[in-house]
Length: 414
Length: 114
Image (cartoon, rainbow over all chains, first blue to last red; front, side, top):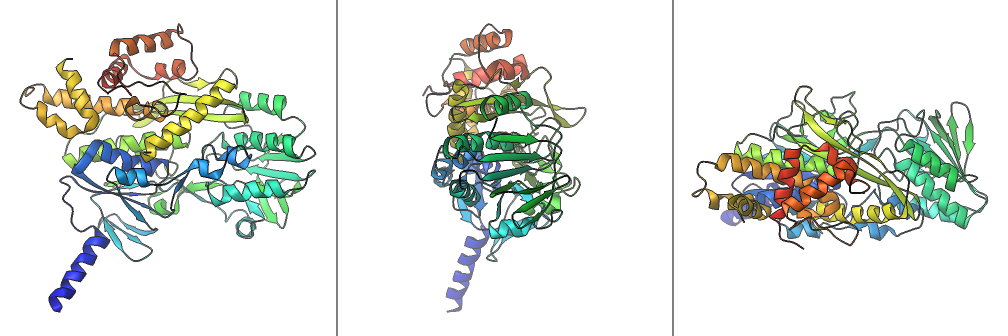
């Protein structure tokens, strides 16, 4: 009886803690299944094979892509078409745990899940995404809780809710979008969303208006191209005003410094910081995680690699899913080298390509390449490389859709 | 196919296969292994658009897997000079060094064409 109980206990421990592994290089735990975390899990297996034991913890059942989700909000495609499961990663040998990490012990090298179980690791890859800073805007948290305001800045239920609210709004109604001060996830995202909501309104509710109030002094990405799109395609529907930061939300009224706005649909995009999971490592204004760009390890936290929107961006480097994918590959190469006791790549390179739709049929891009600078110990955008589209076009809309299919497949092993 | 290309081809599947090269490349192995992992990392920056190992989904993006290195290097040079038109490629090719592009081209030549 005792022997049986011990066996059960031992079995439970092995299950809960991954206490044993036959992988010679050790256990790597990836927390967060967005672009960064999924790519890390996929490439650990692609490059490490059976030498590494890889577990991915994600609380959601499926990945829902922020890129392309503005097309869902505009009614041009369905939410299912931007959602993918984790079966592809599992087929590559990644162990999938659905759960929520509530505590990280970087000294004891373990994480604790909400259900009390413990997962141990030799190296940890954290891809926690963003959390929202709601305390500085009275009424904002309550407005989200009641559904009166929608952020839709983490794709999924919020994306569907904003779509439903736009559909339910009467013709002649007003949509308000507010944009937080940079840095935030996906610099061109709000302006793309504005274009696609305006496209939907012009077609479905021609008397409705979209008011875009931006806390920043100007459009934050692809400025000239977005301004051209606002004027050419969306005049009369979309009104854009810079230097307007959201102060408070009370009922259906959003208060800004110089005006109160009453609207039927409130799409209020809040200020952001590193995801809660990484809050103990957020050493830059207690907001973002500073990293060593050769390994993606959090400053002063050997063994803890952080990728994606949660990190303190290098100069000229936007927070994008594309870069989260690229940073994850740098992290994986470093994790494997460090587990083998080898030197890490002294010259990592990452690049970004980001497409934005300005109408349902036309898109444009911004691109950049970032090389490691040994003297300044950061990634620097290569001068003269990268740039934006000459003009939005149907051809680039096709490339945008191709980009999405390929980055989803690359990240999730589809 | 030269020895380096064979090693790159193996690296596409797993670095473990490097072990196979140890006996024949005892003296140059450390340098080659370094090149392999570096090439693999550099080529992975292309995967977001052109597919993992240069084998893309759908018709929008051209495959890179299996393209002869000299053909790819000429195309990249033409993007850089402006002789070959494009959208993203003429801009980003300028962000990589010639040596980096050579490693990328050698890696993709060694991948099986889709």
